[in-house]
Image 1 (spheres, rainbow, N blue to C red):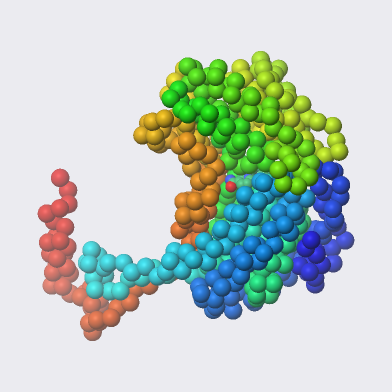
Image 2 (cartoon, rainbow, N blue to C red):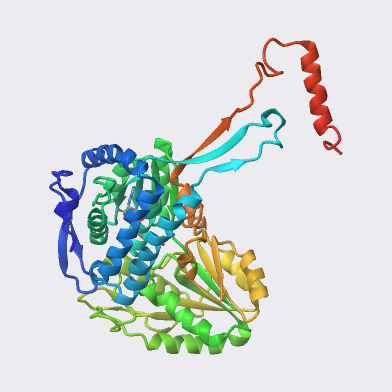
Length: 512
Ligand code: NAD
């Protein structure tokens, strides 16, 4: 396990600590310090001093460190997966696919692609009469110090994962992991040190919301992943500092199942993408709309699938499908949404209760007879629940899917992929999958980000790294006159000649 002392040595004299627990057993694993504003200021100073050397290494030098880290992960799968499982209570399979698999892939992806995405861009000048003949170039320069603030549900993928492109672009990074899952990030810091990352280029600041707020005070750019409520506070703080901030927030992802869908695939996917990581996935299927002709059969198949799921504290690979719920307040939200739905007329087909400890679990739950007056169809549940609603047709499904403050992701299931794409284009969501869900996150060249209250900006793709840079525009005049015709002194002849030139250029095209 990563030692806290290693990463925070010399950073803190904080007397305050947070206990880190295993949600599947309720046992305390260790404690970590809550870093103060003064600690963050000192860390930022060291990060800024280290950044120019890291930038000077260039893309190849930085890629070498990232590739070494990829190899380190490949050599240490159990260490990485076990630490994630211990502090989240999730299954080994989820930690392996998302935290381990994604992050290893991302290290290689950004090592390979950073140079291309951030290469200088030459622009034509012939279409700008006054700038014609000049050399026009866009350059992407690292911003300097990036603050990444992460959630607990994917403590490596959604925290360290967003640090990788920031580092590849030549920045220093301070990561503030969730207070409930700091150990995975500390392990990533240990990994980067062992792989030759220069000291203080990547640091982990353990602590709570106040530590996150203190981090924003120190950095040149904020990358935040977490709830919409905290995202609003982060954006306010970033506005006060006048630094860019990117927000990856909550969701209420709809699944639309058309009558011509492959029902087995759709039912398997509905069970998996609503229950994986106990439903604690930002892009979890949170509500399902099914065209009337196949509704009964679909509900039967999904319920059968969910009934077969094993739940409990993971005891190694292949032991359970559904792990723990992270902490008591989250368990209470899930219970509240189910209670609210039942009070308003919903029926529970399976599950519907939290399970007694040790550990924190909520039974995989399928709800029917639901409608949009219920919290389970409107608010982010973030638990192992799947409310399924009958709709007359895809038009009704689209209307209901868009009836949400969120717009993170959505999915459409149909045998007619052309129709599926047409439906996808009508959905108000940053990403839409047809006959799939969540897998767009694995396509690292495809931008991923929310619409509406689900966020601002994107990760992955070109913008996933350009957002960590400052754009510098370069105009170089190579063939220079002694004096430009529009320069002093002003003479009527030259002014009128310039006017004739503009008329000649645009006169025939402008206006009706
Ligand atoms: P959260 O908003 O409670 O906390 C996220 C982080 O913000 C934590 O590290 C926390 O300490 C920090 N924080 C709290 N107050 C702060 C403040 N005032 N200033 C700065 N930082 C502060 O979220 P959570 O419960 O950890 O995560 C679950 C949420 O994250 C869900 O809503 C989920 O949908 C969302 N999420 C979104 C994505 C995405 O890509 N869109 C991915 C994963 C999780």
